[in-house]
Image 1 (cartoon, helix red, strand yellow):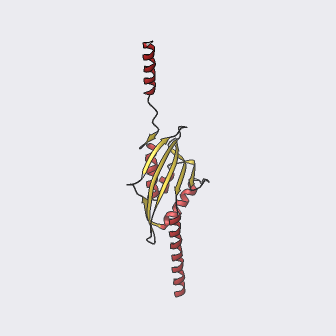
Image 2 (cartoon, one colour):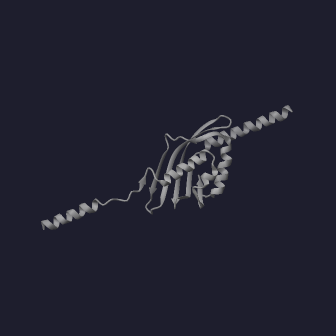
Image 3 (tube, rainbow, N blue to C red):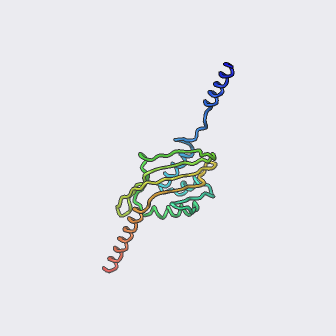
Length: 172
């Protein structure tokens, strides 16, 4: 009876000591790929930025409706024209890779996007990315940020530019 009890305890001990599959990673090939994509965005290197995505990737920007990589790249190229400088605060950002319960690979990024518009207005906003990788390429990206402050500053900048054009036309 003692042997049976001892054997039972050993089985429980060994089964509870089995190694669990690691599911969270501070660094991985995928986190490095996302960091490279962010660097490409910051330097306006759209070809390099695009190279991280699968051809069929879907990108969601504050929306449940996806856009293509080509559409997003065009939008980014246009929207970055109003910035004199911009980028993410590398001292406060956080990135991790997670293998979810379906063994899908997701990389999550939290960062502070800072920049100065061409009229000198400084802006800062938190951004969250949830990025799915399949076969080393981004297949799905969800981007979340509150663009209210940025949109208002751009509207003000555009209104100032229109007002300056009207003043110039009146002088002629």
